[in-house]
Image 1 (cartoon, rainbow, N blue to C red):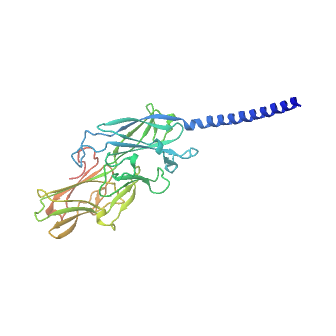
Image 2 (cartoon, rainbow, N blue to C red):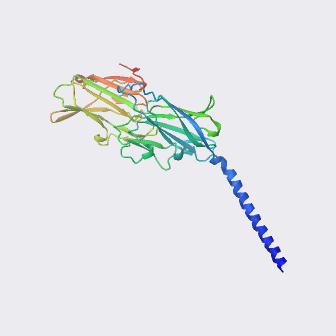
Image 3 (tube, rainbow, N blue to C red):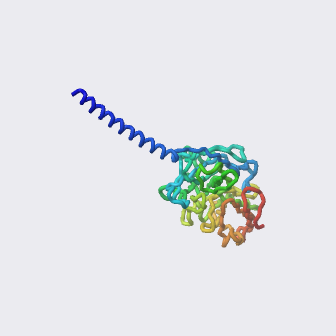
Length: 347
């Protein structure tokens, strides 16, 4: 009797051990299968274009960009071989914001999943203008979001608080390298050695200078017909536009009081491209009266047509003239590069 009980107990115990071994074996196999997806690689990233020793064409002051955000976009479905932007979502856990004071280049690291496909977007800005780690901060002058949900690489947008008060932005897309071989913008961390991103200005510049202003003029206000408020940072396609029908206060740059018979306007704005080219107006105040004048400029291929001006990324438009020509027209200059003080356009 006792022997029979012992035999049954031993048989039952053996069965339990077999089940336990199978369960442990199954867990081990799952862990092994999942391990490649969970493996994290630290990839070196070099950011260039932070040339703080230069001066801006639009203003004689040092560059204001001293903070950089590295935002990885991770492939959602690795089963799709094509690198469609709609198949990439931001990997916020791998994003990194770094301060880059007084540096012409900067080295950092990104921790990325070894066998996932990525594309890295880099945005440069000033520490006082935005903090990715405190996105609800009331002092942030712009936000990162999307045109629609969910946020993807093909619909991410940079939205400024004001279309007429745009901070300075730089933008880059990282290139991946396996030693000296260029892999491209899309990559798997396990197949590369380094990443490099060269920042260039996303914004456009506007400089207007008017001289010989009569003493009876008390102030001059610069207003745009329409302005871009939101933009897709990679394609520079406008996502939000303050249109001609919107209130003027949404498109007013600033008001200047003449000093030494002169006013000067210096502003950044988001690129309009040709689709959203805009007229500019001067609201001239004298006494209790205000009169609006269209800023008239000559037609120039790719820049102006019918007094409407096209603003392109990393380009600056300079308008200057004597107040006596306000009804006739001013001189238009055009630079192809904000990163130097050489005017390459017309005079």
